[in-house]
Length: 306
Image 1 (tube, rainbow, N blue to C red):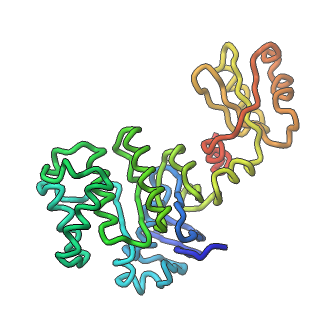
Image 2: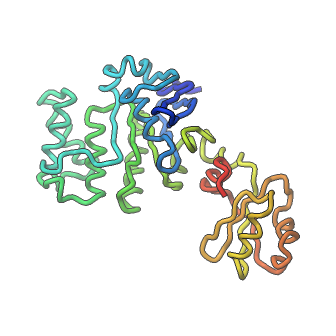
Image 3: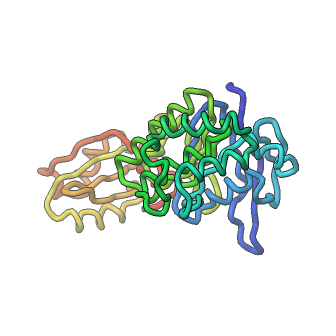
């Protein structure tokens, strides 16, 4: 097993009577991109804050980069980068001024700061924007600047809290290419997301719901082990067919995707296509195809959502 960048055991956080994170166990290998997938309010951000030492757990043990957290959170601060969901740099300053300020916060000496700002400007395509006031930049440009600021001090571990929630698909794709470059250079990355396509890009993944991890592992393994078969149906009257299917105990989920109905059938049924045709006689002449599972299917089966 790879050396771990993060090891958390029994991690729990309560706010009064509300349990935001419940007995979470987490193992993140060094150099990997590890994702937290789940809806808003499921505990992803709370978990990140505990792992960085910003929030003390109610119970549990945390080891990050060999440091005990929250007791050694101050020592951890220089080893990690953190990119928040909400853009948090100074909109009245220019790109260059923001990067210089972040570099000074992390104690970079002047002789190192100037070339580091130039390097980041080149890597994250900010050179032509250096004099621009940040408040006038697009969402994708701000995202690149926020990532540049988060890696200013070359952290060993990078925490990203839903970093692509306000950018276009092309910017999201470019952003992930930059994450893979960082990972390839040895940086460990922990990223929260509610985008299924982003979660599939991670080396490892935890699916969270209501403060608990429901599934954990590489995306391909999670899809292979989900315990259901996936069938797509093309037929007239899909809305009515969906309602009838959802009433069957062996049907985990049915959701319409365009002109097709995507149905998850428990693996106990060895021939799901034939089984569906027996349950709904009108499907005898319809188009039914067994298809590859997706991460969305894993999420549905893991969380029990119809």
